Image (cartoon, rainbow, N blue to C red; front, side):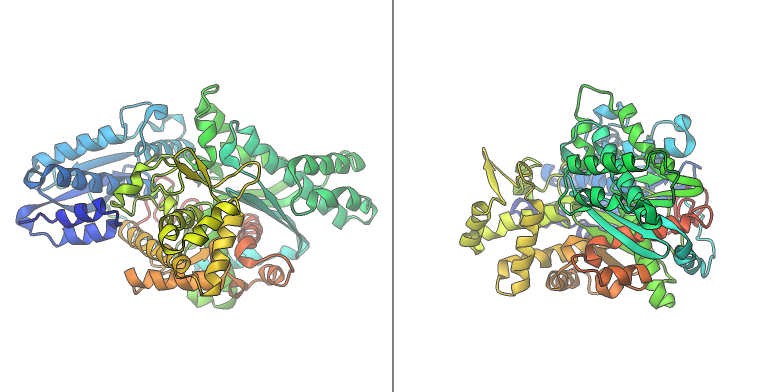
Length: 623
């Protein structure tokens, strides 16, 4: 008789996806006499545990391929949990303390490189690197290394529960929009293909700026920091021009740098000329809000394992840890542009999306946010954010884009990570992570998978237009001399809009399917009260593409509700002004506006966003 793993292994070898949630559900139905219930207890910095139960087939009964599959499922489950909530230690146990516990603990120690130096840790170990850097940001250098060991069953289980804070999320949303008419704020949305900035002057959105870049190609931290600071200096000069009639001469020198498509050289020239016109000017922003695509805690960027820093991480001419710590202190650099008593607030781009959705929704329908808000950004990567019902952003990594959702698709594992056909993560090389499923990389991958057979002429057109190039045996999307990622994505999205390209429509339906599996993972790990997932970013700016995603999501999880950050999200005066602005869309600039509101919220007092309702920083949010 076939084992419970056989259908999964067979499907994986045939090139079909095998979803983590489907495997977990199937294993949960196993006969207790032929399975083992493993408890993974993750400890926070305060040693408070958070326990997760996983049922597995007994390993000694499995064939070699099935044994590997179950071990991979277990490692992926540990990785997903660690990527989501972080922690300082993992304790593994099972009733009766069977030999599988020792095997699985050794497998984690080896696969995650628990005993290795950070620079030498393999793919799964990147989650430990992030957890350790985050722990150091909270506790200092003495936080210690991550630990993993087998323990006697049952381990200690979490007894924490969410503190009652009814209405606090509404208070946070009100703070975000109060007093704007007296303040000048800068909001920044740092992405993988561009930086978007919003300037508000005395209650109105005065300027929106977009600068294209490709941070994954950078080899030094300065290349990440310098453009951000240069753009802040540019908006500072624009604010001076708007606030002071005698500074009208700034208009002529600033406009070339503010123009869409301006390169770094032109922006630097505009800033230099502008600062020459008003040397030593005392103006400073009241507050700056910034979202960055990496783990952020206490306004410090602490992850260091993203695609954006890959080339810096691989630069052997420098020691990565001290180099990356310079980026961690971006908030301190930005503080020079803020008045005494002002605020600088940094968030990961996912939490900023959730915060933005909460503020905008509360402005129209306060009751709808009382259970909190969970949001995703769909662009270069998948960002994830959660504002809970207490108005807090839990202090956890929430790196959902790194989570494994597919244990199958074996043929697509054979391609290198930079090949568009690959399911292997750009950074970790781990197969099946959301990075290659729900972001623009997922669109490119599925286009290369389906179009050659379904629409050969359209597939050939991708080469003719320069969206795809052959690099030896690999397929790539060019980023030089021109970055073709945005044009390629826009081309496919417009083809989906026509309703005449079934193969392209299939791509966006499958993205929705992948989002549903991501939802099931967050339900298992976090169990947030918020049921809806609000989507931001380029992939949902066209209504038809979003509708296709909804169709796909319902095939997997009929109960999942997807919302979209489009013009209908506009509830606050700032967002309504964006909605009416020609040439700009809510879907693309919502987080820059959200960063303005977050900056304003931070002026009201200490952030509700860092401690969370479950306890001090370093503890876990309760499920």
